[in-house]
Image (cartoon, rainbow, N blue to C red; front, side, top):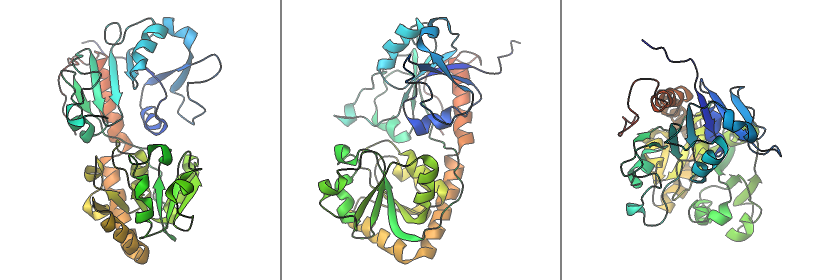
Length: 337
C-alpha cells in the first residue's frame, strides 16, 4: 500500500483574513504568492510558520499538490504565475465565500458545470442559493481560533462589526441602525466608518463609530458590551458573529441567510421584525443576568458547531481527496455536516 506524505503543499492567496487565519492552522504547507514590492503573502499576519511566502518569480518551479482559489481572477493568475492550469494540470478547489447577487433563485455559479473544480461553500445557505450545476460540491462551515470566554457585559450597549457600512448600506443593514438603537445604543467596529454618523443622521449617543481594531483589542472591546447585534440582510455568515459567540456574548440578529442556523434560540433573539430586535436589545441591557446566560449558551453552541478542530478536520479530508492521495474520486456532491 502506498503511504501518503505527511503534508500537502497548498497554493492559496490571502483574501479573507479571518477565514485564512483558521485555514493556515492546518497541518500542511500553505504557499502564499508574494510580489516583488512585498505585497501579498502573509500581509504581516501573525500566522504559523506553515504559512510560507513564495516570491511570484519562483512559482513556476514550485511543487504544488493542490490550489485553493477564492476569486475568479485567480484561475488566470494561477495559470500565468504557476504555469499550470487549475483543474487540468493541478488539482483545484474554489471556495465560495459570498451569497449570490442579482436574480438569486437562478444564480449560476461561475464554477458550475466544471467537474474539474471542486466547489466549497462556507454555509449551507450559500449552497442552497447558488446553482452549482455539475460541479462537485462540499459545504465546510466556518471554524475559528477560540479567543476564550471573555464576556463582562459591563457596558449596557450593543456591539456591531461591519466593514464599509455606508457603501454596503442595505446589504449590511446599516439603514436599520437608528431604529435598532432605540433599544440600546450601538457601538460600531470595522473599516471605513468615518461617514457613518452623517449618513445615518444620528449622533454618537445612539450610534457611535469606534473604528477598526486589531483582533485582540476587538475581542476585548466586544466582550465589554452587553450584546452583539447582527443586522446583516444579505451576506454570507460573518466570522465576527461567531467570534462574539465564542466570547460568550448573547446575539440579536436578523433572521436572514445563515444566521438562522448559526444562532440557536437559547443563544439570543432572531427576527425579521426590527421592533422585535430593538425590544430584545432593550431587555438584554436591562437584565444582565439573562444576557450572561444567553451568552454562555452561545459560546457552548459555537464551540460545538464552529470549532477550529472540526473545520480543519473537514478541510484536511477534502484536500487529501482532491489532491488524489486518498483513493477517492474528487467528484460528486460530498456529505455535508
